[in-house]
Length: 223
Image (cartoon, rainbow, N blue to C red; front, side):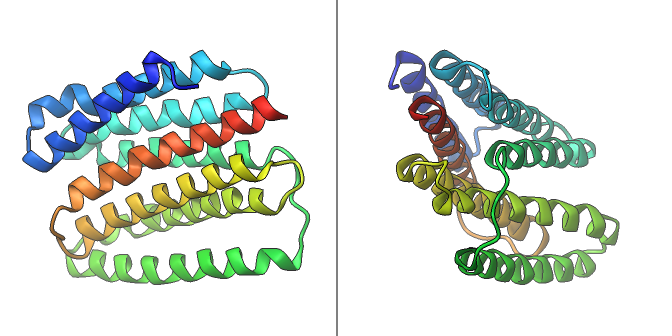
């Protein structure tokens, strides 16, 4: 699975992390979308977009669109959020291709994700009111809900017999990192600026996407 495209993608990711840390905005016009383009190319090279992988491929594609929109001026912010919202919807579809049986084992992940959503959404809503951005309350709530459902659907793979444990672990860790990245991004933007937040957002975002792709490929290839 570790082809030349994978390592080239890692190089681009490291360049983007460095550019984010140093504030090299011109470099990020290439490194930020370039990382996702190479991730999509590697994903296509290893597994193609056949069968259930199409949902994860679409998730990566809409993530690329989100990266592009968020590199543009502020007026494109909601377009970026919309693109990432669709990415999460496609990831949910990918994780839930087979129905989930309601089981008591789901109580723990449901409680953890629900608690994280409640705490995060409450803080961000307060930040929106404080900064006079109340027009974003509904879009942010919708996004936070969808993000939480994406994480929950990924965690459900750990409890399902149709997923082997290793791909499920990769996918779950990737979804958790993606959740952390988006949560930190929102907190940093709407609540309070944090040191090196931009760097942490990108590192966890890229690692999250890579691990989700690993999980999806491992699940389909081993099935």
